[in-house]
Image 1 (cartoon, one colour):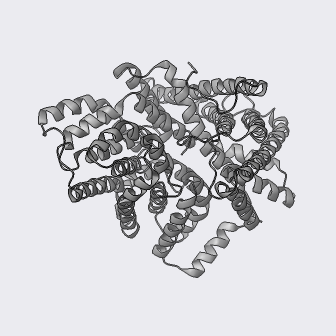
Image 2 (cartoon, chains in turn red, orange):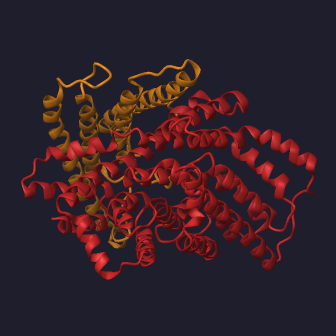
Image 3 (cartoon, helix red, strand yellow):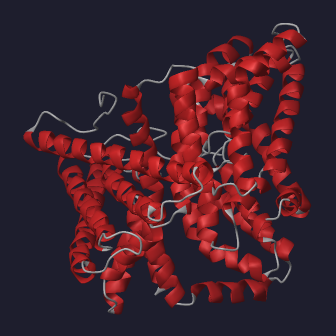
Amino acid sequence: MSTAVVLGFMLLAMFGFPIAFAMGISSIVAIWMSGIDTSIIAQRMMYSVNSFPLMAIPFFMLSGELMIKAGIIERLITFANALVGRVRGGLAHVTMMSGAGLATVSGTAVSDASALSAILVPSLSKIYDKGFATAIVAAAANLGPIIPPSAAMIVYAFMAGPSVSVGGMFMAGVVPGILITIGFMLLCSWITTRRGWLVTGEPFQFKRLWIEARRSAIVLVMPLLIIGGIIGGAFTATEGSAISVVYALLLGFVITRTLKVSDLPGIIIRAAITTAVVGALIAFASVITYLMTVDLMPQKLSQLLFSFTKDPIVYLLLVTVLLFVVGMFLESNSAYIMLVPLLHPIAIQYGIDPLHFGFIFVLNLVVGMLTPPVGVVLFVVCGVTGVRMRELVSNIWPFVALMYGVLLLCLFFPAVVTTLPRALGY
Amino acid sequence: MMSAITFSYDTQSLTGKVFRLMDMVFITAVVLIFGYMVLIVSAQVALRYGLNMSIDWADETGRLAFVWVVFLSIPLAASKGAHIGIDLLVDKLSPVMQHSVRQVSALICGALCLSIAWSCIELCKDQWDEKMATVDISVAYFFVAVGIGMLYSGMHFIRIAVTGVPVKSSGDAE
């Protein structure tokens, strides 16, 4: 039955059916043909979404949007400019630091890509060619789901079950996130030097840095407060995300005063619709997961894999290849929701650390957001800036290669991922 | 205040006006329930550290609100074409075939949603007398959200099948 459901789903998905509803249609046909009561679908859908931890997704999305509307990017940019604006590739470094800073308050790459593109590409295009300017922004935006908080990690932790905590996943992303940010900056220095682009920006001054640091403190303190509170056990990830919304509202209405009450419905509805897209995927996927469980699909798959290899590294490499292919054609949330319930339990049977596997899984799909043909971040950047996809894609490969380098580093040296969360008790 | 909200269908026809009105009701409900979610979860933390007390029903009503937000927003996402699909193969077809495939797709999705909405009626009847653990509210209200969301999603899909597919905007969903 499971095989027929999966094949039916794939056929419908290939014909452009919305993925969530393709899962629902193939499931309802299988359930009807098996003689199971079809009300199981509504029950599974409701119970899968009835989750306190999942509420963190709309809250982090909302706080990210509110913070952008509150004008934090301008503050981050001026701070980063005071810090690294004068070195070679200065504005590229400013973009990377702004992307990393934005990633600490926003959990998604798409909203970051949209905001960074609109604000930074016009300035970047004056110094670099448009393809490189947009590639820098796309790469910086892709830090969003790696550096905590991360909506992708919340979805992963939810789908993986009790063996993975949201806080643990967040901490697993810190060291690789810093490595990728530094790697991107070094890459920008190398490319700008090689292409002979001029040094721009004002000379470094401690006084200016101090002034900008004070001005940006209200933004820089927020991730310490929220993530620190989650790690310290002061509140759960969901509570932390709700506090971040309140913080963003205070920032926008009281400190920067750029937020208006009339902005709120549009921002809330955007966050709600994005949540509904993820929610629909989770709800319909739970029906497929139920059918697969009834059919002992995870056990059959694990037997098949164990007959092929008993080496956890080979399993991780196989998953990486699978996600590379899947990431080229499937949107990342759909991949988490369909594949985590199948592949995560097998990883545990292989003796792989759940946080290690979780982070490798997330990073694979995050890189997929930068690779054509379904690189959602590329579409957003091109859509906002009007730059042709070909120009962007030809400049994005060095950044993709660097992310795969860090991915392989994390794959072969799990301590890069797991040391920090384990040291903090996860 | 709702001026920033846009609709991806003709709002001048009678059908369009009806859907616009219903969308506005759903949008208002989502904004209010979302606001409640933020308020109750953050108030829980504030009370825990400020007054050393907690609200027993915060978790349960927060989850109920979340289920309502998700299922009321699913039709809004459907109306904007925000639900994720793979268009690679369909885009290769002729415009006439593309239109036909998308109409059939919307019609089948609509039928699925309406059948789920129908099954929610029985589930609500079965569970109407069962109360939540911390508040005197029927647990059936969880299924009311699923039923209403699926009913309205079905209506939007059928409208799309009849009037045409909305143009997707990038960044609607990640």
